Image (cartoon, rainbow, N blue to C red; front, side, top):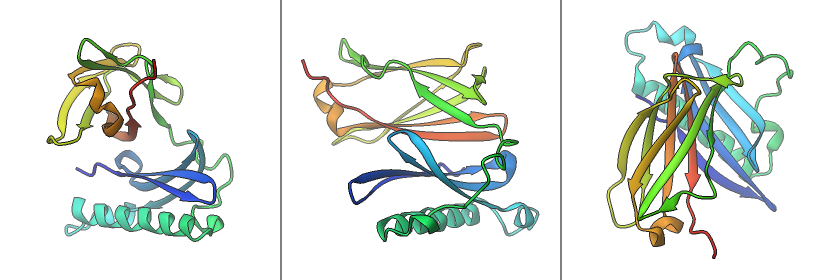
Length: 195
């Protein structure tokens, strides 16, 4: 299983969030570049021609995805934004249904020594009922904690993890949604709310 890669990289005064994942349903290795939560570019390569070869497996896909992710990071660091992603016509990806993960309660996640996250998964804007979510909670001085959930009819899911609020600024949650052969990965930074 390829989990994907998420990296923040700064060029000038702008922080770019680079997210790469295997889109198994479309046989694509896709890298998306976000600025302040808005997708500003994509780079994708097809591995359809290689998929039928016996020696082409997850480790080969992961290496190709890792190389593509690094190339986009390097292009951004060097200021070569024109080379960081594909120049695509706006409608060329319209046939690909986008899977999205939205964090519904970002401003109120901690209470009673527990971290509660409410998420909604959508596909092309519609609720993705039955999507499988895998959560990886990374915290300081402890092994990562993993848990799973399945979305309800409205595409919603909730997880609750016991966590000390003082550790939140140094913690993060990586969420991967699986739905009908597609995946979406999001990384959420946690922080303690100012009183």
